[in-house]
Length: 253
Image (spheres, rainbow, N blue to C red):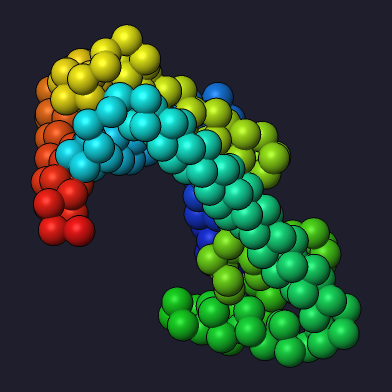
């Protein structure tokens, strides 16, 4: 009976691992899927922030060349911010996992009995008897790698992952931001009237945002129409708010 319970518990752990593996095999969680996700999110941020910015500047500045220059500066600043943010977030995630892994490894070496007691408390909380708990503790702790993996997963709730290169993540986000924002300032090269350029810029933004919304559904498996309309509405809202604020400040200041 007891060996059966032990096998059942560890089978549960194996099923959890297999389930996680299954999730990581899905588009959203594979390295390729995560890269696509970062590109989509980076482009979306570049589009929404840029359309809001150029709309605001257009509302206060009539000269297209000035909007073009300030728009380029905004895109470069935004892409740099995205690069640094994504890089630090990815690096911190990897460092946190490694730190916790090393801490658990050190505690197992320095305070093995305390760690065993923590395992006992975990299984007692699940209703196992004293004899069952002791057999499980022996099974867990007879292999150090299994012991560490157990403590990471069942005590801390941290699951091992294949972490992406922080520099690569930052580059993807930064470049995607630029690719999302650049098309919106191109009309200001060809139109002297900034308001005419803004109308073309917003039209480009709506089309591209709609495409990004459709692209997101490849990963999120949600309705393409709902996703696209949501992004287009948010982008339009950003443009509207930016233009109104720009117009307001140009009148009052």
